Image 1 (tube, rainbow, N blue to C red):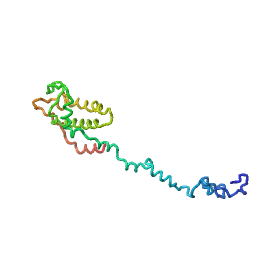
Image 2 (cartoon, rainbow, N blue to C red):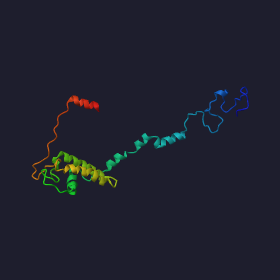
Image 3 (cartoon, rainbow, N blue to C red):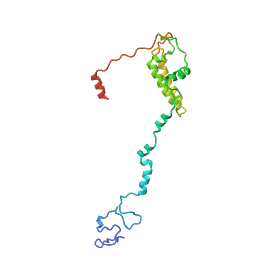
Image 4 (tube, helix red, strand yellow):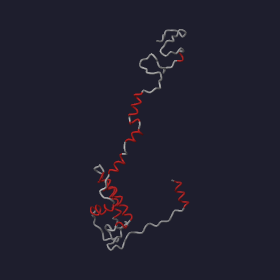
Length: 201
């Protein structure tokens, strides 16, 4: 115990820190006589705390990720499609469920549909996208998934597919004389312009 009433010359040196110079006092020094202090190294780690850190997955995110499978991939792998491909879906579901009053064809009002839908690359691509989304919605746990598919997937695609004015099958006729509009004209981009676009992005 330090004698506070003593003068500087009479300063006691048998204090708990063992320092002789009162102006060189280290407040972080460890008292060897303090029973609450274990060991001499203030930087030493407690083995029990180290074990707790190893066992806590929140403190080791990398290790916990390795043990747990990716939930998104696992859910995707568990989806078993009802139809093996989009062609079977178009035949077994789309053409049986979707029923509309079709026009005479040839661009004469109403809606347009060609039974040879596979001749139209855009129609085939849209139907394939619809099948993917339909299978996903059907297997979803969300009660609103199928409703969202009708509103946000099917209806926008049908407006284009069945468009009898400028749609891909707009001039379809019963005699099969129309097999789609020609592909869009295309010319390769000049190399100098391609380099400019590549550098910009």
